[in-house]
Image 1 (spheres, one colour):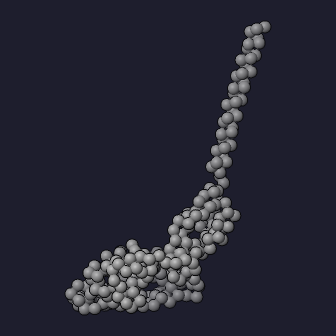
Image 2 (cartoon, rainbow, N blue to C red; image 1 turned 180 degrees about the horizontal axis):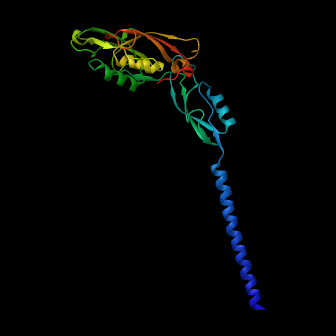
Image 3 (cartoon, rainbow, N blue to C red; image 1 turned 60 degrees about the horizontal axis):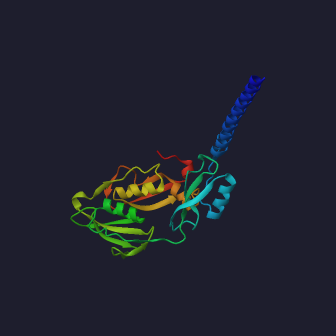
Amino acid sequence: MKESLLRNRMVRNLLLGVCFVAGIILAANIFLHIRTQHNREITVPDFRNLSLPLARSTASSAGVQVYVMDSIYRQRMPKGVVLNQLPEAGAQVKRGRKVALTITAVTPRKVKMPNLVGTSIRAARSELSAKGLVLGRLTYVSDIATNQVLRQTCCGRDIRPGSEVADGSRIDLTLGLNSTESLTYIPNLVGCKYLSAVDMLHENSLNLSAARFGGDVRSYADTLAAVVTSQQPASGQQVLMGTGVTLWLENGSMHTAP
C-alpha cells in the first residue's frame, strides 16, 4: 500500500514537472513571437516632402516610428519638410521600426569660408563639398597655371577666408588658364541626374549654361530626380575650358539612368 502510494506520488510529481516545463516553453515561444513580430513585416511609407507633424502621423498609422537624424538647408525647398529617410520608402521592416529622417532646416547654418586661392580646382571642389557649399560658375583668365584658383567670390563679391557664409551658398571661382593646356572634352551627360550632370561638367572644367526642364518637373524634388535627355554641345567635342553646356531634362521616374 505504501509502495503504491509512493509510486502514485512520484508519477504525479513527474507529470506536474513535465507540465511545468511545457508551460514555460509555450510561454517563451508566445513571448518571442510577440517580441519579434514573426512574419508580420510592414512597408515603410514615403515620408519625403511631408511636414514633420504629418510624417509622425503617417508613421503612427503605418506602425513605425520616426525621428529627426539631421537637418539641411535648401533654398528652393519648403522649410521643415522631409528631404530623405532611412530605411527608404517601400522597405519591408518589423512593426515599431524607427525610421531616420533628414529634414530641411528653417534657417541656414553658418559655415566658415575656406581659403581656396592657390589650390587646384579638384581640391577646391572637395573643400567646398565638405563645408556644405556649392561650386558655382568657373571663370578662366590667362595665367601660367591652368585650373589653379585665383579668386573666390559669392554673389559677385570677393569672400575672405574665415568669413561666415550660409550653408548651401554658391561659390564662384576664377581660375588660371595656360594657352598650352586650355582645351577639354564635352562629356556624355544623357541619362545622368541633374546634380550628377553638373558635377561632371565641373570635373571637365565646364559650366552649366542653362537647364531646360520638361513640364513634368514641378518641384525641387523633381528637379533633383530629373535626368538629362539631350545636351548642347554634343558629347565628344573639344572646347575651351569654361565653355557652357545647355541641358534638357525630364522627370526621372520616366527615364532610367545608365
